[in-house]
Structure formats: structure tokens, C-alpha cells
Image (cartoon, rainbow, N blue to C red; front, side):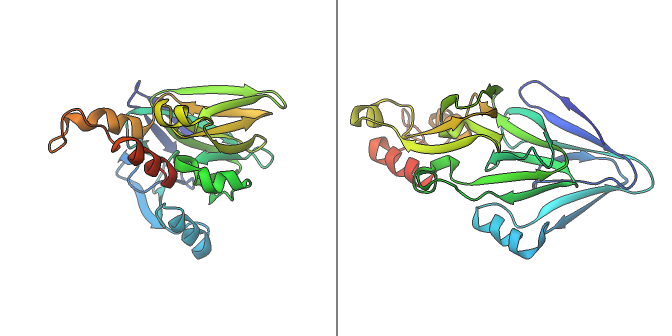
Length: 246
């Protein structure tokens, strides 16, 4: 498999497949493909994993692409302005990604719902509640809203990030999600109610923008939206919105 990422802040990845190679992506992520590319929706991993994806708020079906009669190309793009990054997966190097970060991957990559290891992550996860695990061997692609910022954490080095800005991390990185301390900070800080604490060693990817913040910035300019309002309805609306997830 060969690939090329093109564009600046509206990127897409074009994948070239030889005969016998296969790639799969999220439903609706395909932008264009060559005429000899066969496209088929499948429940990858069987019924149980498909049900797990549905319960996590994802689609049951993923779309597989296979060329016929020689090599072919297929291109994938994200659902918002942003960038794409390749992630190399190996048996000893799995990757945990935020819900909606996964874009596409080689057929040798397995995508599954990651179990929460910390109680705080379950109750206070907000936008980071649903996580997906990339395992196997090969290349996967993730999409970020805005630009990627990458950190390589040393052992026991800690990084606190707005939960909505976390894209993913190596499975060697430990994580927990906690509520912001202080009543004034919670209600008037404007930085969200939850922070994700990531502890090395391993790679961490964050995004410079969230889809939620982008939608909030655009909301006052949309038809039918009152001037001067944002995507949330005041402090109580923000609290409710953060608690159930953005």
C-alpha cells in the first residue's frame, strides 16, 4: 500500500492499493475512487464487535475497498476542517483513539471499542468517554479538527489536556479524566469541566480545535439562531452538555 496526504487544513489521504490489498474506512469517509475499486459495507470483527461499536455510538458497518483487475486508488477525508496523520501499528504498539478520530486503515488493522480502565473516565469522560483501540500490524489514519500537536512523554511525565482536544495516545500511556477543581473555575473559566491527565511513556496526539468549539463559533451566524448566543445555553446548559458529552 502507498499513500499520499494532500491539502493544508482540509486534508485528504489518497491510498494506492495493489491487487489483493484492501483498506477500510468509516462510513461516509470516502471522497473519490478509481473505477476498478470495489466498495462493500461489512461488519468487521463479527456481530459482537459490531454491536459494541453501535453501543459506543459508532456505525455497525465499515466500508471495505478492494481493487479489481490491477491497482487502484481511493481517497478519504474527515467530516470537518482539519488534518490527517498516519499511525504505524504493531503487535507491541497499539494505539487508543478518541471516538470519531479514526478515518481508515489497512485490512491488517483491527478496530475495536477500548474498555475504560478508570472509574473517572466512565463517569466524567464527556467527549472522551468513547475510545477505540487500533491493533494488529500496518498503517492506520486518524483525523483531527484543526492541526495536530504531538508529544513524546517520558516515563511518569504528565500532561493535562482539555478532554475534547485529545485525539489519541500509545497504549503505553496511562490516562484518567477528572473534573476541573474550583467552583469559579468550573463555571466561569470557559475551559470546559473536565481534563484528561496523560502519563507517559509514549506518544500523545492532541488537536488545536474541537468540532464542538467550531460549531459554537459558527452558531450565531446560522439561520434561526439568536444573535449573541453560543452553542450552549448558559452555565447550566454547559454543565449538562459537558456531563453527557459534547
